[in-house]
Image (cartoon, rainbow, N blue to C red; front, side, top):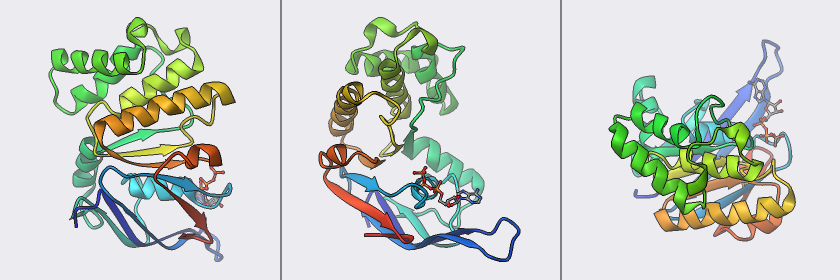
Length: 224
Ligand SMILES: Nc1ncnc2c1ncn2[C@@H]1O[C@H](COP(=O)(O)OP(=O)(O)OP(=O)(O)O)[C@@H](O)[C@H]1O
């Protein structure tokens, strides 16, 4: 009951207005324990992004249930799901998606303000997080003034801004060259371990997957 995330019997298809529906997920099951870091490995087009969007309450399954820390979020209103998403879940994408007109610190402050944190507390947390990933000297730099690895480390901090219990990441270092990807991935793992949160991290990189607690493979719409 206290698992960080439990997906059961998740089904999802797209029909694009044509009679033949594309079945992407065919009853996928996943249980993520508290503090567990799980790699999600899937061939391109297998439905990894679809699964992450459903786990992240950004999309709804056709069938199946999504439960977090014992709370069944499947049938809840959009409002309740949005609140749960803001409070419980952090997202990291392959491309950082930082707001270009704001500084690194401001990019981490904004989601906290949206969650009701005071400006002073939000700034203090942004500085603390950026310090932990070695970016104390980049607080007031805009994304365009930072390297790819620095931008992605800033995006990690933003994902953690509201102290989520679950981190979902879609190829979080896929956009970086192999050397940078390795060190930036280390930073991410250190942050995840330090905060004790659970994480589901999609990657094509089997060496990175091997550094997580467990690997799940998405195949034929099922998790194995
Ligand atoms: N909104 C949509 N409408 C129709 N089909 C979609 C939609 N989103 C995804 N699909 C289809 O569902 C399948 C799975 O897509 P998804 O993006 O989840 O794959 P993926 O495993 O993340 O792929 P990649 O690793 O290449 O990003 C694909 O065949 C895709 O074309």
